[in-house]
Length: 308
Image (cartoon, rainbow, N blue to C red; front, top):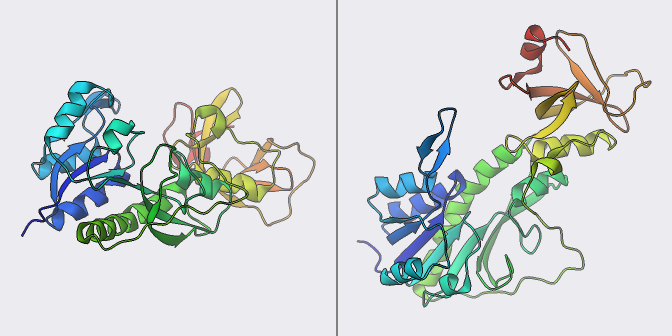
């Protein structure tokens, strides 16, 4: 029997898909989905729906794709669904008129242990900073971004070989379970919230732009490796080889002795199997890369087909 609780779900990318699916599989009454407008994607730039929209259409859930969340017409349409609760997973910042609309409020699933890593890219920044633990938080949305009272938190270890991609996959699956628990609690009315703790030092997680993703070889090997892992597979850390941009997706610490007479950023290769870049305190071996104009490949495969 379907739950009478009327829910609006807001989300766009793959990260949000398991959270929507778990609600629909458990017969929650998702009366509409709000997602980003369809966008051109792929080499042919074919107009493509968001992953969340594809799920909504599969379950015959109405889809709204506003370009302006402050539009009176959109807000009037949203109000017509008479939702009691709104859920946000990897969407965009909402105006107060939207998040304050449902009587039970609007809660967000955020991929960090708040208050740390408030912002658009918490998974990336946690790995880039070398954290060994992160997690998930559900919280009620309020005025300031990612600052509302918390509902539930769950921790997740960051493994030594994690990339943003592998960690995101685990968190999106675990996050779906946390969304379901949160909805169940709110539905019964038997829940408590807690204000986010006040910490002396907070680490933000701002949106990632191309210039942020350039590798600084003047840093220690471990720090550079974390930077690369945290940006893999997207948007990807990059450096220049000659005059061409090269994305690096994974790198390993070089433990064997190597010549020290090189400046940070210089590289050495045997042309067959290895490509090492000098860092502030040693060398880093590139395991997977993509040179501008080429496909992504393992280093050995790349070197057999390309001369540096």
